[in-house]
Length: 97
Length: 402
Image 1 (cartoon, one colour):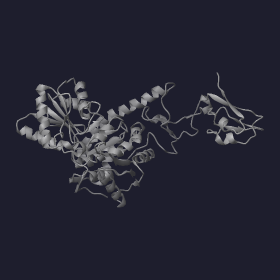
Image 2 (cartoon, helix red, strand yellow):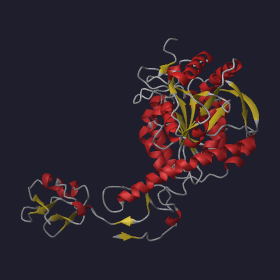
Image 3 (cartoon, chains in turn green, brown):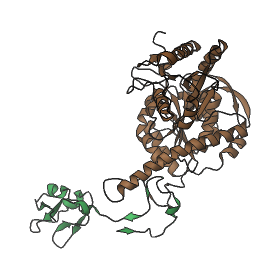
Image 4 (cartoon, one colour):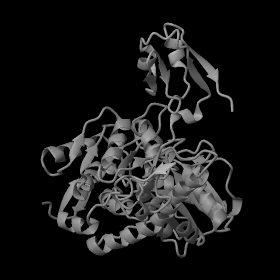
């Protein structure tokens, strides 16, 4: 899915194709598109210490009533949260289609 | 305002004057022998208010060219100069400049490659980076350094070229060789160059938001075709440059009265039986040797390459079609071919022109060694003999027994 710029400020079609690599359209593909493993949070073990929230490199940890978990649209499955969780509340599960 | 006058200067000062008259907005230089005095001249011109440009003192050549990328993307006319190990350290951004189509002009004060440790002239540095998409023009005289530097901006910024240009002058021989030079006036140079137009196609500009150099390529989607289109576009720009270089040299001759061969110079070639091929400042001694041989009755001519990249295949084929043997003199080594780099280019042109004539590779002038009229007399003698014996397989090293 692509989105036009909200305010097209110049006509990109005036630049000859094949001249040099530029992009004038925003692509909304998120890192979750190529995830191989997903983090699963054990809600009973999670104490909301926010360690996962601090370490997540794509800042995809969201807060819920009694636990944190990853926004799977953004999470790229790196597993840093599972490694860093002091309560061992996160396991990585292989994605299957 | 600089008015036209005659001055006495060396090639490094000539290059600096060429930069001054081209009015760059930003200059970044890091000193390296034999370019250092060029950096000093530029700094002095800016300190004295003769050149109104931002001067960046950065920590090395990698940063020099990187900041000039940013400046060009913001619309600035830019200039730098380097050579040898400095050019080697600059290579990462150097490699990226042509496909970004940034019209940056850079003097290469050519220097031999280390190791062995040396600080003297030779064209090994420039020849090593010949195939990444920069235009390369080699100068013969101090005056040609100044004239070519100004012309380089017209060539680089031409809308059908949009490529970086190296103006190369031999370390030591041109960098420090002092002679008379005609300095053009600022008004005349301004009229010649016209207004600058650097970032109409790719820009760092809040009013034209774009991603510069996004991830392109791969095996799927639009990647493969898009990547090919950029590669072909760069090749097209290089081929357009051949025509633009000729047009710009013609206009320079009309406006300033000095006509330089834009691609390939033919010297006493029309009735020649054989010819020597040269590049850069060695050509002066080579022409003297040709004159002496002519006085002895030998029908020898000379072909000088000014524009080495893009290689002027058609002009070279026209030139080599007039003779029966060639002696190609390089001031650099092609280690891959046991030959000189220019020699390999000439062999390519001979194949293209369907002329399988003998062409000997001579290598001389490495690391500051002199190339004299005497050396060229040997080149002429051995090239004349090659008409009957054919060329040997190994190069002839001109300074081997000096």
